[in-house]
Image (cartoon, rainbow, N blue to C red; front, side, top):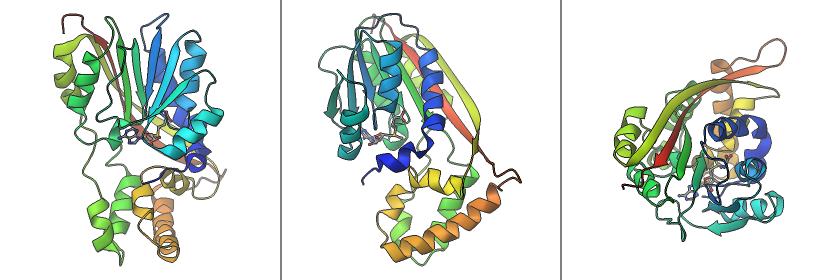
Length: 259
Ligand SMILES: C[S@@+](CC[C@H](N)C(=O)[O-])C[C@H]1O[C@@H](n2cnc3c(N)ncnc32)[C@H](O)[C@@H]1O
């Protein structure tokens, strides 16, 4: 399932905002080693490089397309590695594992987060952000249009269960191993411009697995049905702006040297 860095980066400001809010809560001054897990095209890695210019940065991602873009446009002097976050283990204990908008793609990730917390250097920090918008109108519309479409049988197996749990689950997984643990949720209200901006947004993320199995004609039909549904759920204002509420979950855990 490939990623399109260009489509993803159409909303760079909005996608960077939670990474910046997460980074603002990282309680470190001069971390020596940082891993950006699910670094994508290198946008979150660039934020890390700006805040911690002396750190050795490693961007890790499973997508070749994303890594190619990161190598080209991400911060220079960073290292890049193709690896799966589910099984990735740092070669040397890092001071910070930062992961913005990755783990919603990794099934059963709470134990993986607990394992990663244990791989940190003493006093190291695990900082994670995931969208928690499975019940948002955008995602409900995707599920409904997929279920009603003539290709429901093909699309149904690709519709995932809600991939991100409530904060309690992450608290239970991380608290026994953490010296400190900070969990919070934020609902952004993105003000998007252009025609069908919510459709363009989900084309870069949640829709990718579904669009990947449709040929171009069926894809166009699917997208036009979804565009109608999204335009009703997120009406364009008279000034051309479409408001797009988006809830996200944040986790900042500090490694406890006793574990
Ligand atoms: C939504 S992008 C996030 C990019 C960037 N961190 C940011 O802040 O915008 C999610 C990234 O996670 C990567 N990804 C998805 N599943 C993965 C996995 N199992 N292991 C490693 N990377 C994965 C994708 O290739 C993609 O680049």
